[in-house]
Image 1: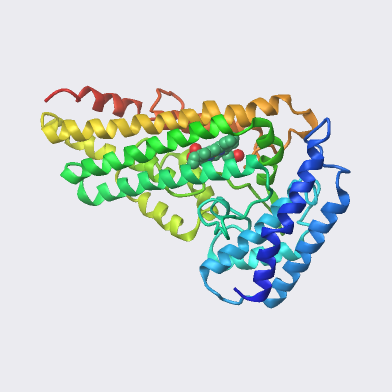
Image 2: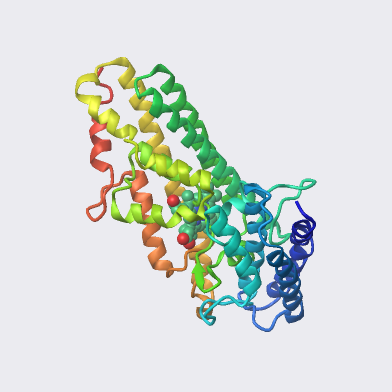
Length: 392
Ligand code: HEM
């Protein structure tokens, strides 16, 4: 890491966190916790100016080509700075035509274009690719709610990835291979871990502290003249690998396919490759359906199908938990109490809350295989497979 990059990284890990935390402390003291206007203006000015100095130097330095990891990490630092400016009202896509942080935007665009991702911080920067120094990883603030949120997002993402890796290995062995049963079992353990981790998050994270002090750093914001949506915990390939390999969601279904296309550049290049490869594969559900007429009496079929259907059930339960617990408690309920003037751009992707909830409901229904007339779900296929259980 060269000196300019190291100085910026050091600032992000120290003063940047202190300045954000100080602003959060002041916002919190108000009657209307969501207001940021006219609060801590001197602190905001310091945050913007120091960040600007760092990014100016880095921009002038140009491409130092220290490899992908360094470039991705630096992009994360610029991204955290831009997201903090948005959080404190130092940029606002409703009022600006372009980002007021011109140098940081130019730097973010230069790095992002060179490594093939969006020019803003992504989930990987805070969760899976956030190097700790002496036990401390990068964050916006020192709020306990933020650490809780990042820790449990990371745990959930890593466990989803383990489940996806196990399912990908079944592809090369085939569903009837004896070892595939072990792989189904590994995927089950990983999904159970996601469920328990989400449950712990639900009991430990304070709804108001999350809603007013953590979520606002994930708002959409300008980089240059374009607005980019906020990061969300779904910006990795594994969740969709599980969806598609289980056969619960299909890449050729328009709404689901659109979501995949939209998220590609929010993921690291290696994740993009995994997702692209997976989109070309036949699902394991299709494999079971193809062999069912001739094999449903076989011992292997009964055992392996039972394990497979358990995975489908767990994946649906996790989607339901995300929807009924996390989204309800940490977004929908506090939003209902928030003053009307702050309701715009509430979510990471920007669309109105009702629209976002509908697309999350559709995703949940696909994953749970519920019966729906207006979207494609695997209800019929799952019922068919369930009927072949116990027929040996
Ligand atoms: C997406 C809320 C934690 C997995 C979303 C979205 C919201 C949301 C509102 C839609 C993003 C948008 O605005 O476009 C929350 C809240 C959480 C939470 C309030 C906790 C306080 C988690 C955790 C996981 C997770 C721990 C597990 C890894 C996902 C996934 C998506 C997503 C996979 C992408 C959409 C999908 O494929 O389902 N979340 N989330 N979330 N979240 Fe969470």
